[in-house]
Length: 228
Image 1 (tube, rainbow, N blue to C red):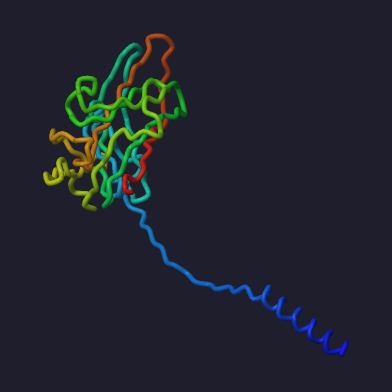
Image 2 (image 1 turned 120 degrees about the vertical axis):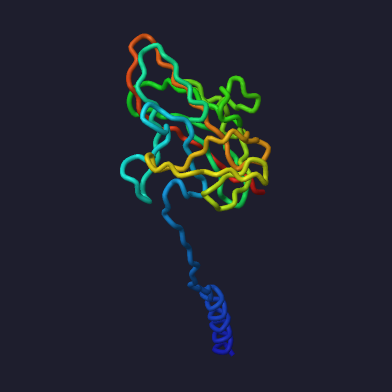
């Protein structure tokens, strides 16, 4: 009788152990893909407009290739001067959902930060006089906090040859063969109310009279999906 009871207890223990050791594992996979394209063909792309002293302010940085970046060349200016490019460049959304621009910041690599930056709709009007404008950056100080949407770009059409002003009016973004970027000098206004898939970026350079230094750096533009 005692032997049977011990065997019964051993059987229960084996059942418990088999339950605790019965974790199942599986291996599966999911594919992914992405493509490296020229900045002018990206889903969120920059386009040129205003000219600097030697051509388009926006141009490729270095040799033209799919892995190249773009840069802004503001030219040569004397101490105590101000230069404002009302359309230093444009931002165009080609994604199939709308995208928010939340904030902009500038980091310097040489010199000091003398920049002021706005988003606005009218390419040829100073942002100060443009009712649509949003002041984004002021000489090392952010003017729009990261949690706030400054501008909403409407969904794009995945076509880098054009941008859309109002949901239906397609505007050509032609190719600049000298600076290797797409550009537009069309004066159709961009709207911040999710109807335009582009916005103009105004940049002002305010050079002080005392001890100015040449400068280089980066403009950081922060996006988030507007889809819910």
